[in-house]
Amino acid sequence: MARLNYLELPVADTARAKAFYGAAFAWGFSDFGPSYAATTSGDTDIGFQADPAQQTAAALPVIKVADVDAALAAVEAAGGRVTMPVFAFPGGRRFHFADPDGHELAVMQVDAG
Figure 1: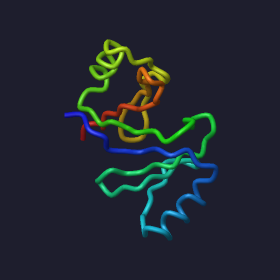
Figure 2: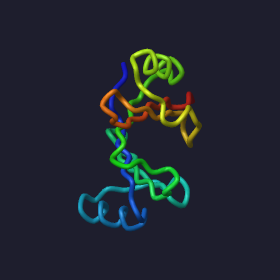
Figure 3: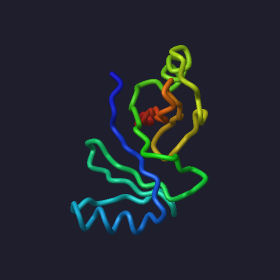
């Protein structure tokens, strides 16, 4: 079953975001490159994206699925507009789409193993 499992936030400075949320909520983070960090609680995690070329205009809900290619076909068939084709990231693959109201979301599949 597909479920919301991640929220990605555009930030100006990853280190500043980590410092704030770490101090405010005692969250720990894993770094995934120079401009990306995320909580790794195993629950609904939050990622911070500081690379302007990769940022969305608003918070990005991420839906976890078992088969990203099947989800892509289903999103397109339902009338969604792909805004970023399927791409690999550390730990899996994902794509972004806009729903009929223009909200951007992402769909991701975790690598097996």
